[in-house]
Image 1: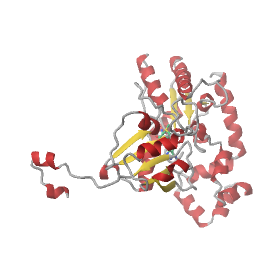
Image 2: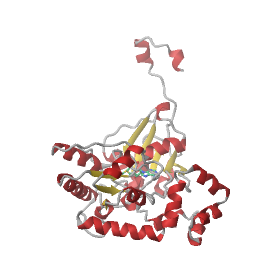
Image 3: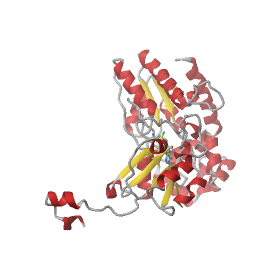
Length: 89
Length: 260
Ligand SMILES: C[S@@+](CC[C@H](N)C(=O)[O-])C[C@H]1O[C@@H](n2cnc3c(N)ncnc32)[C@H](O)[C@@H]1O
């Protein structure tokens, strides 16, 4: 595999480990409706049971989505991928 | 292939299986759960974000287009090495995405098999969240700057969806925000067809399962001051009801009663 990819993966892993529980919790929340029900019923204990840290629980409860996204490594500077000129394929 | 807008909820079974079986995965995915989800499926991940246009240096080219062309080269290199390559973009990989179409075309031209898998785009989320059915009165969809600078027609009877208003007016493709007069130009162009108090919607689909979508309704005259980001889409609802084309209907003897 080319070296550049190994470097990039390294960065991704680091970001992931730092917030793994929160990432895992939100990942499962997006596909598991029973977890959604539990979360809606009692946000704090549901996240605690998942091992989400107190700091991250607070961010979720306070709806601090900007901070959460940056902790998880969202990068919306790269969101625009289209050009203006009509392009030939 | 595409991750959809909310990962992993929007990932299709077909996409998951392609990601798992690839020799290498290239991904340009901005959302918070995107890369970690892909990494769980395949650890051989190359983050194309590293090659995205860097506003502070020319390391990835002089504008967005140059950086997309580099991404195409990087992906093709692995294809030409004989690897089974999976290339991932967020949303639908073919909806307002330049490099995906180019990479497929070039790979095919060079004799390799390449296919695009459909996925959920921001437009799909928009229809669901805002309760708009494009079939109700029609829909038109443009890249915002292309709408400004080219002679697109404006159909005020149908919904209009304007993409990339977060970089509107920037013909240089060097900015990651609207140009100085981008939103003013957009308001100016739209006001040729819609009244100043026409309601428009700033829309952002949710990127986290705990988060609501954004649906800010403003008047056209407030657009210049609006807060827009790189993921904001503008919806311009129709101005008036769709009139019947009587001349055509009469020519073909259509029962007008059934259209009213
Ligand atoms: C380069 S296009 C990519 C679209 C993507 N391929 C898709 O299928 O939705 C970027 C534009 O898509 C729209 N977009 C992307 N994410 C969005 C979101 N979460 N909500 C609303 N619009 C979004 C915005 O108009 C943004 O400027």
